Structures are given as C-alpha cells and as structure tokens.
Length: 334
Image (cartoon, rainbow, N blue to C red; front, side, top):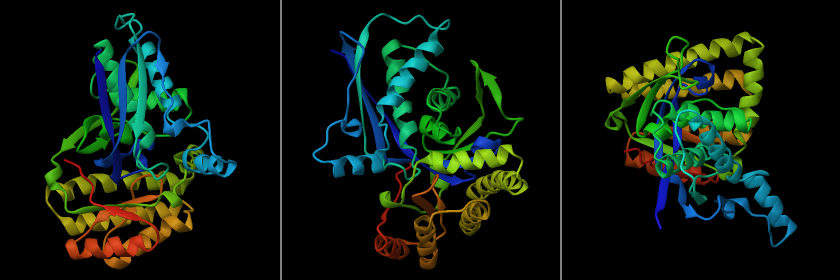
C-alpha cells in the first residue's frame, strides 16, 4: 500500500501584514517548529478520517465548551473536504483523474487561533498529497491562490494570499500584491513572489499565547468592511503597510538590523492606529518592548514576532513573556 505523507508549516508575518488582502506587500517566514501533516493512502472508498481536532464525543459538557473555545465549531475536516472538492474542480478540463479512491487524515500541532496560519497549513498539506496521488502538478505560483480559493470561496474565510505563499514556497518570501504585480493564471489571481535567503535575517523570536487567541475572521471581517467603505485611515494605512514591507526587504538585503527592528515596531503602531486590539494582545507587545526587543503581531493576534539582540535578551524575553502566560521560541526558518 502506497502511503503519502505531506506537511505544511506554520508561518509568521514579518512585515506588511495585513496588507496582502488589499493590494499591498508583505514579508513572511515559515515556522518549522509547528506543522500540519496529511496522510493519504489508497482505499476502497473516499474516506476522511476524524482526528482529535474534530471530536464529537466529550467526557463532560465543560470539556465540550473548552473544545469549542479552542477550535470553534469546525475542525480541520471542513478544510480537507473543501480542498478535495476544489482540487477536482480545478482539474476538470485540465487533467484526467484516475478512479482510485483514498483514505485521508490530518494531524496538526500548530497553536490554534493565534495567527500562525494553522488552517491554511492543513489545506496546503492536503493539496500536496492530492497532487502526488493524482500525479497533477499545479504551478508553484498558482498553488497559494488555489488554497486561498478553498478557504475564501468554499468556506467564506476572510483571508489574503500571504500565508499560503510562504507555506508553499517555504523559508523567507517577499510578496508583491499590487495591482500591477497581479496576473491571472488558471483562472486564479497570483502575485509576484521573491524567495530571499533566510541567512539575511537577524535573530528572531516568536511568542504566543493560546489563551489570548481569537479566530482570524474577527479581525479581518471588520477591516474589510471599513476598507471597502473607503475609510481614509484604513486605506492610507494599507498603503503604508506595503511601503514598510518594501523598506524591510531593503533593510534585510543591506543587513540593517536596527532599521528592520524600527520598521517592525512601526508596523504594529500603524495597526494600533486603525484597530481596537484586545488588551491581552497589547500586553504581549508592551512586555517584549520593555525588554528591549521589537515586536509586532505575527498574524491576526495571539502571537508576536520581533528582533532580539543576544542570548541574554532572549532569556529576558522568555522570562517576562512567560510571566504573562506566553511561550517564547526561536523560529526554525531554514
């Protein structure tokens, strides 16, 4: 029996987010410390196996409530199912699919609802497994747009391309989603993506608190409505976010660590100017900055990323952020 095992990793937005959904520019890194894994093998029927993330049986009502608080009302099964549906639709008229069936299951250790792109990782890993099983090659620059269509069009998840791009490409990626950069391929809109050498990065830390997490839709749905209404502060902020990403790319290439750290701080301060943020999320930023590190959200909230100076500062970050219930790691990006 052929058993396919495919992975996709968490990601952290280093600069420019959340402008990826607003014709902006971003820099993102992969976080290989956490992953989603999909296992697929030939089977008599098409079977999607329930996992721990999709429990329907609980030892008590309190445990049910805790599960809903952590995972919402839907686990990853909907992502797997929607990815299969969109994959078949994508192949229709392009690729002839064989008639063999399969069983598929997923597992993930990506912290939930803290802005580390756990949902898209499941879809990316599922796409990789399906491409291998059916021997179909979706072009690399089209894959992120395909995954976004799964989440946005099938499931109504408000999101941009950033997460899917870096999860497909890996490492460190600079992305341009400006109107002049976007091109249509295979019926999907794709940006301009530039992988960069991860050794350009200064020491980065990532901190997260699952207690402070919230679904990404809470943040993005409100921001989208305000942008679409033409709210001047939001529209102008998206332009500045894009400019910050471009400046951060220059700072990396020129190895200007202090400049990069200042840009990271500005990215967060700009976000504060247009969004009312939860107190627990703000506290994470404040604590990290008091230690001397730069800090911004890694995604929609619940995790932060920034530059630290040396091992002594990393130790101080670990202690200070640990005191407010955060875990601090060095992201594995290679």
